[in-house]
Length: 447
Image 1 (cartoon, rainbow, N blue to C red):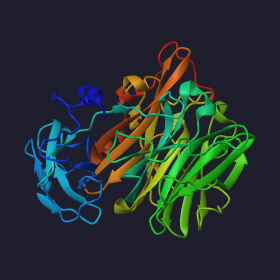
Image 2 (cartoon, rainbow, N blue to C red):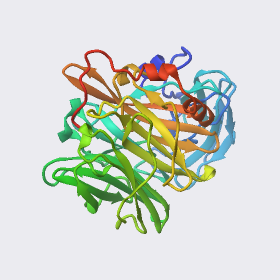
Image 3 (cartoon, rainbow, N blue to C red):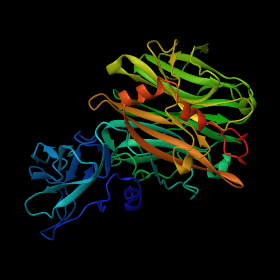
């Protein structure tokens, strides 16, 4: 996160700095956990990690690192010893006050290094933070985020955001790209990666990426939709976050019949894929959700309709995840009305079996929540932390700036309890902001 973003969105006016050093030797190296967002009086989602190296860059094992948390925070453990990779970690519990907080790492013979984090009120929603991305087309405009985490860091980072650029709504730029990070709002292409990671072999464009990690194979699969003469669901994979296989066709249908495929792997032989069948695309008066099953994530069954719906709307793009600690599936989806893809809101639903779903009355997020999302809230993704009971959301959306829409991504952390309380009852204020701004044309080309 940049200092400008910290100043704009942090809940305290403390000055922001990424990390500093003391002139007592070569600096420690930040390996993970800097510039996170969290809740006051709660631990951060990513451990704080430093790497100790010598003057040649060789990792140093056995070095003792001391952790000192300011702002009445706690570092556990207070000291740790570097492993064979030269890395040592601690879990940082933020202090009780909202705003920017700091933690210092020190080791004999090395300059201190300081981490920063922004604390939201412990029982409240975090701020919605629009964050920048450096896209291959230079626009920074993006849509369709999908988040995935790998237990072992690849290319220097354990967290990945797969997303498609969408400069002013031009589909030709809509090719899956990958970004790596250690926190929530600071993302960059992994070292050695040149985005996009997939391009169409003929005409059309690529869209709707969805990432799945296979822990037993240490492999990341990325599924996406090719749009040309039909819908072609393809898959590429990587074992290091840098090198990707050639695409493999896994499903096909006529145009707009397999929109926004989202894949869940329950086990090596239990795979599920939900998608939206829109038949004719944005002009469709209604859509419906279908489920395919597979034993390997490659060969899929014919689709079956499921009960997932939202009163008064049609679903357009969807992200489904299995939540083991709660023994249920969660779906996050944007909705539309007939004749347009100007989706005004994002909703959630839950299911025990993936077929029968319970939807909720009010949206998770509606357009107008931030300046960047004045007119559209689009395909979004999430991650649930059962320890803190928080949900991290990565949103996408747009604001109309004549003559086109401008697309951005944003992040927010919310307590699960507050999310489900807020969506469970009818909200008049939420319904009011679903009305479009005057003079904004409908979005007719489907991203």
